[in-house]
Image (cartoon, rainbow, N blue to C red; front, side, top):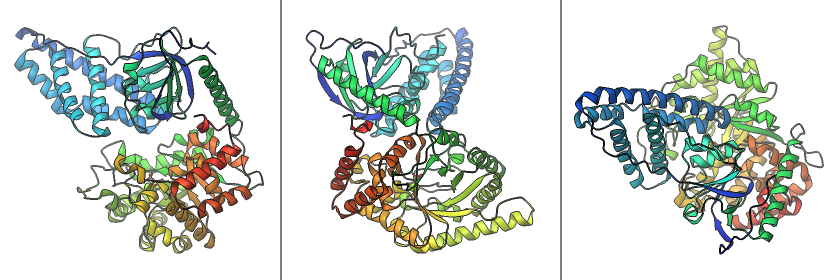
Length: 596
Ligand code: PEP
Ligand code: MG
């Protein structure tokens, strides 16, 4: 472990800033300030005889950039999964945009400036347009175009592809923002933490840092203008606190936090093969949520005992065409084989809402989240639905496959969906195609009407799975992706807690298990509550599994039931959250989220 940086240097006073904790951990080190390359490309006139050579340089640089982005995409998919891979799909689309390339060629021929200048001018203008729009999406889009532009210019100039990382000792990287390419190529051995001025929880830097397991804080305002290379810096990425020029006492305090955090992480490793059982022997199934078949391996590696949510719509979202039945069979079969005999719950396509696709004719809707989405799309596009159900039924021979319908509002959709499933099974039987006719069928409880009908629904299917991400937004009428109403999107709203309670009781009354597969399941604070309410299976992102397992194994079922009963009697979200936080803190003082 490296030595502490010097305490309060000269006139520098200890300064505390707060940002958004984006990837957990505690890092202590010296600042390496990454100054965003201000690419200035002067207008360089060329002779008419040089036009052809410039166009050839452009073709070559586009080819090299494409190959480089594809390499990044591969790396992203392997180390960080589909969400990050998609960033580079977007980069390929920017690079291969026909209008962009035609514009560059036409302007080089007409204006006779170097291709570097024209490329910079064309993409630079696009960046400016994006920057002027409000909201994180446009900012990210501008950053993506900037990333592609930088790569292209580097290749045009014959320079290397990515940021050089030649530090003599590990550093904490500070930047206004980090391009996805630079973030992806961060060397974890040399960069111990990342702090950026911009970005939110779902920004590219945040997603990448989490996937690469590098502690990070984003949204720090103007940190990059307050520090210099070599300054001492502490990032408490569990709380979002940044401390500059820390004094000796603060440094010692954070060294302690860092050690406890690391010890806690390594203790989690040892739980991998143990069940998620309370101290008095009540076992909860801990499963993972996945988007790509190979992520099933990560679920097992983190100690999960199945997959409770396979978001199958990824098959659409990474391409423009419709996935064939055979391709789906192959994809589902692969995941089922990795997990067998453990369960794989395949959720049928949840398209619509904000997950649009060219092949599904979704018109502009005034309220997409109240519109043509998920099971509603499937029931009206029988061709797609039947192909998917046939693929699932066929894959069920390769493992323990279950099917789950999203966005069910009542018995009508469940019955209709089951009828299509039965037709698909009958077809396969007629065609003598092997399949398991008895796959378990479940539904997602993510609409308030489904909560109220949970008992009847449970009687007509094999399991319920509560999708809290949507259930909360529909219960409190606060769009889950709208920052302006984020304060109303309260996971611990008493109305939501009661809905979970009602659903569990209804499912159990019908003799069926009840799972949770929304983000709430991965929230440590919620774990004792969910266990106490009687949730049978918690399905969450694989990286959350060890922590939740640790909590379940630390508490007794008896205690969890008492905690849940008390939480149900509280009146506001804040009271419930504070109460649950306090209870957890009492029992697990070394849980990293308390290192604030
Ligand atoms: C949910 O709504 O809680 C859920 C798990 O589904 P998604 O986040 O994919 O909508
Ligand atoms: Mg949902």
